[in-house]
Length: 201
Image 1 (cartoon, helix red, strand yellow):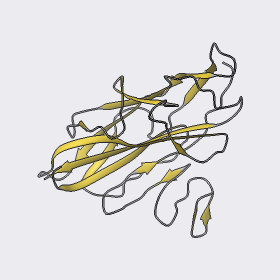
Image 2 (cartoon, one colour):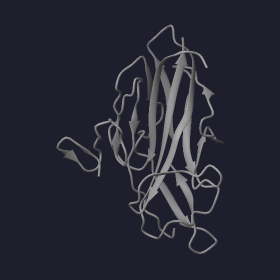
Image 3 (cartoon, helix red, strand yellow):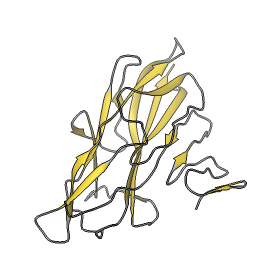
Image 4 (spheres, helix red, strand yellow):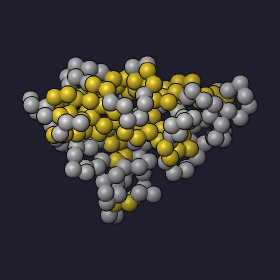
């Protein structure tokens, strides 16, 4: 349970402004934009940085995203809200294991208000998941429980990719390259990806 003042429950902020499990915005000496949500039911079917922007992409939930300001903004370029992605699971050939058979596509782009900003890049800053009410945990980098793809290619955490403001569109999806054997029928699952956008001057 995350608390902020008299607010508690899903979709609340802690005093550091960090959002876990439902909705989060933070600002830590840079522009940050995070959103997240939860629940997919499993069935048997370099240069000096002048500004930064961050966005968390979540599969499942409906929380209205909001910007905390700054010249760099991550904008939605698709039809699915940043925090409203849905996952569908089905039992795999091996009993007791599951596969992601469907994932919404969540697309983003960058808007830049500062004409002096240049060399915009985006990267996967954090990639986490939870199931059955457990705490969020990082996806294993050696044998990943889930894989994030961008425009069809697997995303490597920390690897920077160029993005042109007002032009480029990045489409994210979730898949699994390894059998999902850590869940039980009826458990809820949340997958959360935090994207960081930076630029130089």
